[in-house]
Image (cartoon, rainbow, N blue to C red; front, side, top):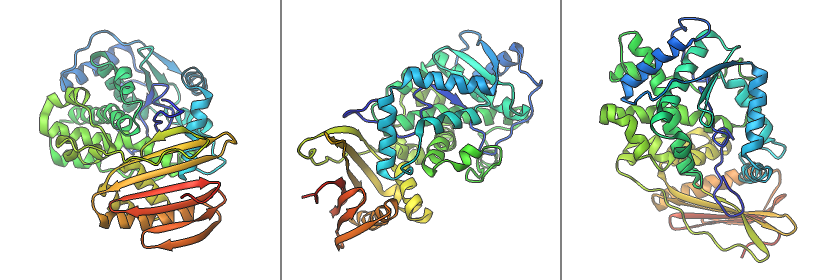
Length: 417
């Protein structure tokens, strides 16, 4: 992760601290554990099951330890403190607020700590090469989480997960796609292990549909922090597990056992490739439109891109789910940059590129609704089929559509030229 001109991934800090948990909001409930507290023999047996499915070698035994919820909370805080600089967290939080994903009072660091503590029935630490198992989670929840985390550990013994995730750290789309590979494969394997124990397999499309078609938008009273989190955090936290699981299924149906190594050796590059594996197979690239140069006396603060996933979230949040679903696949690429002046004013320039002018026009109209929704006061100075400009409490703004591109400049002290 970086700031001050480098790309910044917009999601939870879980990836940064390399702490992964099997999120339990998916409604998946594999059969109960063979004992209330997993022992070394059971863990080794699960690793053998996973090795048989994937072809990955078990290179060494895995140390594990039981932890309390308080210990997990302290662990997450320590990892964030040691792994992420305060300026990086502040830059990420500022970006989320500027784009309209979270409210002005949102505290990214504390919310992330609370979310990870609430959800982590088990987690694998890529740095320590150690499995942590909760002592508070329900037995069936903990069993499924342990399988998920052992899948991480086995993959890590064959492909360094920390290095794999780190290679995409300077590109938000590649970062999210790689996280979907890691979490999606582990989620798929969690289902496959349970299916095989019951004489079934995800190689059967009917079995796969029955196990994967779960309602991830339903609420669960066990997880109040997750239920009350902004839409952006909920969607980006679930995406690697849900969409990644379906992505792994598509590659598995095409390439069989070789698929497990393939997605690490030749990873997807965007959330669009995760959502539509045909784009991955065809290597359809994500574009990054050029942006106007920073205004005088401004310097680049954060740069990045909004992929299909984040664009859909933005549209769902401020327009409606139907528009998000319809327009998302038409996105070809995007780029954004936050600039900062000496007086600490932060401006946003954001350009998106669409499949055709029809899609660009639809997004231009939708993005006007985004701006009207994310600000409390909007004084419209001028609007036309391809122009929308005015002033809000954030400053002056201007949105234009030019062919297949839509450019928005926001938060300026004076009207953009």
